[in-house]
Image (cartoon, rainbow, N blue to C red; front, side):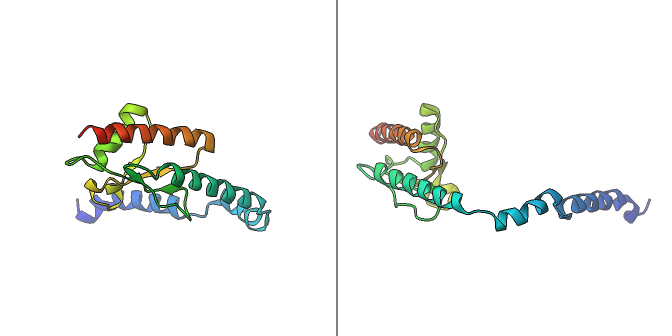
Length: 148
């Protein structure tokens, strides 16, 4: 059996995969015109809601042991919590998840130094729910910082 015949199956599988990934997405094509020509009213309401949530996040997550730059163009924020010496952002996030069930992402996953205490939080929930979650994060952060 020649080397090329042994690779025929692999080549056919790759071509099949490429055809499936590179073909035109017919259902999406039917949605393009209405998406481009339709009303944009919902976008105004969405931007206002996100701005309010960003304001709440920045207000709540700026205080003793924690700071947060107000997000201006996203639906997530990167607060920074003061960590006890020797602790990492990942330890903080895993502790937060275990203690509260709140899932955030450690900042070092985005390139910040692990001891710097950055973490990423998405603020898409409604303000009332978000506010409660932020209160839980603040309470956990205070306990975590006290665990020096």
